[in-house]
Image (cartoon, rainbow over all chains, first blue to last red; front, side, top):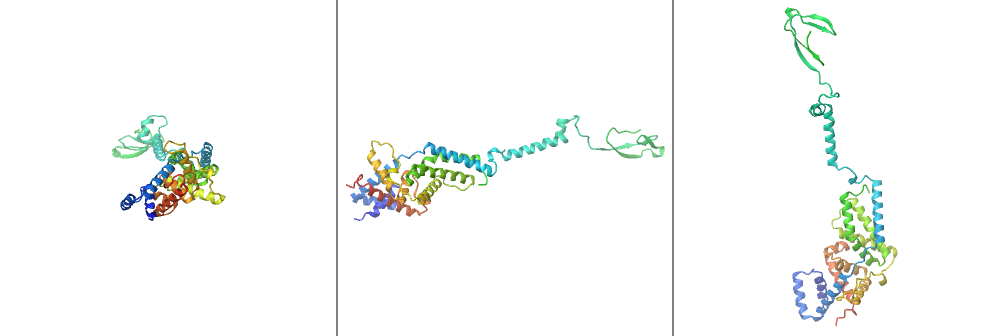
Length: 172
Length: 169
């Protein structure tokens, strides 16, 4: 009997790659064929020995050479390209730092954050010029650079004028 | 190479090296038959892995990738050197056990080393490394039915070389 087809099935059975139909066909044949039963035993026995062969461990000197080779590769890649990412600050952290620095930096110049830290300090920046309304009454004198230029008469009472001041304001 | 490996890549490389360094070396040794050549190939395989991880090349199945790379380098190595494996160079087997006497282990080791390369690599990938037919097909660049037929023929050839150790009667 030519059993080559069944021997092929025996090989696939060893690998667990038989279809259900093939498995049924093979089992039926094995019940009738002592030669294939013996072949099945040998295939399993030899396969078991091959599977149990101990692998040769990588010798230490070769492992050292590989580690050195990878180290050279790493150095060359850093030299030719950018820095490894793990030497840099992670991007989210960098952005958070930039935002924080901007907030603190602006805060030292003006605004509520700056006021929190520098209220009344000597480095405090002058506030923006204010527009004041001054109500002039009779006998008030308008002067420029300390020199009287106009005296308010009765008819001019209640004239309202505005001026821009940067320091103490008042009327004389 | 545009840049170097990030921390995750370094970890992946280290894990791959520790997990498969012996597999790669042993496969190269069984393909080439001498320790120096197997060492050269193993080193080249892991350097290539490092470069591939650095370049963010897609490696879906790491072990298959390593064996494809090892096999290709071994074939190139043999083609360039024009050298065939000798029985004396075949890797030694493990210590004998009660169930598997030294005689049969040594006979199988020598028979395996004496097989044609295509049969030997198929048997190693299946029996020693446990790859599936689909994975072997991917590694050897053949179809799954061809793998099945290849393994059948490889086992036939192995049995033929082991006739005296495993007689039919």
